[in-house]
Length: 248
Ligand code: COA
Image (tube, rainbow, N blue to C red; front, top):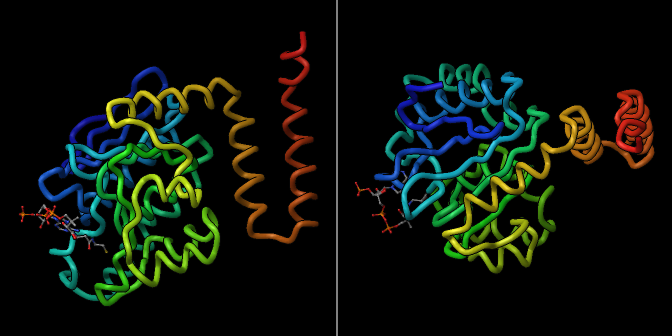
């Protein structure tokens, strides 16, 4: 798949690589990037040759410095802006993909950049990464899922601190509070992300989808409901016949 204005997309060894590609503005997320991501994520979801996604940012300085501030207030009308957001719910699309989504994070990871990373399953950071939600200091609040996804990844108190203070944290602090799974030297970031993706999709895609679904859906229901759901998913997993095959 070729021809995106704001992204690079390619497939290597069953891994789809999406690279946010506006390095001159620190990969700021604009309307064109939303439209491009929508198409690229549909390809990740629907292409049977794709086992996992690695999402990263081009250039030395940033994964993504948040929403493009030059586009604020430029929509023709609020109604049209809302309608397009519903039609192209990129954040919902991220969360609906049953394949492993790995974010490889370097430099600035701010605002919707961080929210995009929170829509992924595993976050790997390089040592230079800095994280923050500047929205409240800019007169708004996060609107790419951050108020919901952040407290599902880190503890509520830390999530509130990041949300309310807009303070940036470095990679070490991000690791300590569980925002990222691990921190690696910058030179090894992409290799580590690809290794993690490969390790996951060496398992049957059906099992990966079931395990992801059980965990995420379980976060939104009572423990009893979650356990009942897990029993159903586990029975379905057994019915795939993979367990027996793996023992033989
Ligand atoms: N939207 C649009 N352009 C952005 C941008 C954004 N979110 N973030 C950075 N850029 C642009 C800058 O305008 C600059 O463009 P220019 O060279 O044409 O002037 C270029 O990217 C480099 O950024 P610059 O500010 O010069 O780098 P810096 O090292 O001095 O500061 C940041 C880096 C990330 C601290 C700073 O760019 C920043 O605060 N960006 C905004 C972050 C933000 O608030 N995001 C929105 C969240 S809702």
